Image (cartoon, rainbow, N blue to C red; front, side, top):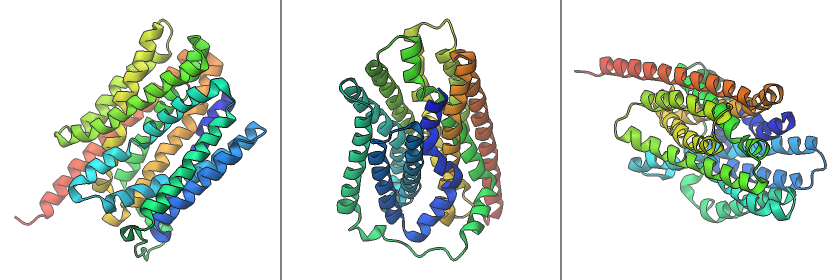
Length: 364
């Protein structure tokens, strides 16, 4: 369980350590170049991982994969905002937040098809193939577009911009909230296949299919966040409401005495409802970035918080389950969701204060 936890979270390590620095690097070397480099690293790490002979080798590959992953995920939002029309930017960001559940769910479904007739190594090869296809698509569809070329870089140092963003309460709260969300989401989804096999007696392929459906339910929540905010639902209601309700839902997934079918239904509901949190946080970045040109750095800090949560969530969950059984995992989800709710309340306070300040500064 402990090794499985680190294997799950290994891809998050690089982002957890340097997400904001990599985002600011993208501003200087060019976002499209960094996306191409990151996709190439993912291809190489997946290809080499297919031939790994030990868990240690897999973990090293996952770290390299993490570098490629963060290079892509911190650079894409800035390019999406650049090519989307002003009225379409909220929709573009709402669709962007689905990359994780849509991609992970698709990979799990493919794994369910591949694993019964072959080994796990074939899944790594499929991942390498997906990265290769993405490289071709980028070279054909994105590289020729001049509006995606590198823009003039900032004259300030990376360290100075990192300090300004990290010292601003809003981006830090967004990162904390996203980190807590990722911690409890990976705690549930990452170990859901193991829970089904060990506790419910499901086959590996059945567990993979069920987990994929649970993960894909998160997409609905991601897209619903944009709709709710557009309809005037306050961000604090979206974040705190989801966190409070899902703390009970997550506990029901792990505790004893819950019927098996209800446990799986709770997992699907949990994934769908908690999915509103990423959408609510991504759309908060323009409001809380210290300056408009630091939106990319604020996104990097968000990704850093997200990956810290993804890094520590699975190992802690694995250790809790190994020492006290599956019911012990409910502790980490409850604590993480309480932190997310607290960060959501702080963001609400910051937004109200910012609005009052702008109203005072606006000439009557």
